Length: 104
Image (tube, rainbow, N blue to C red):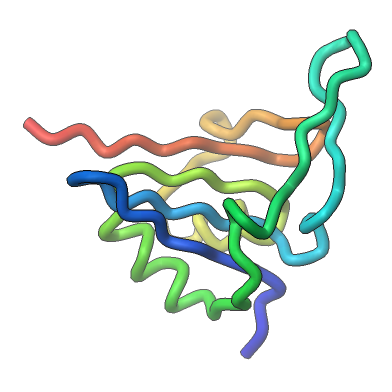
């Protein structure tokens, strides 16, 4: 089933970085701050391959860092117990969360 989510996994040294966003956000420029700046939602970072809910949750279970953007991604991450409503901010008016796994 297509949940309308794209994801890319980046491996940086010992980090397993999961970047996922709603597919329809790709290519959009989101406003940041009040000085007319924007940030591009890029396929280079978030990927272009659509993934299922199960694949996203599998990756989030293994992630040391996750960058999540969009309503659909946030809903799936919340269903999996990775984010809660009070842990989600916005980027250009779009739900956004960053997760960092702390080991200890």
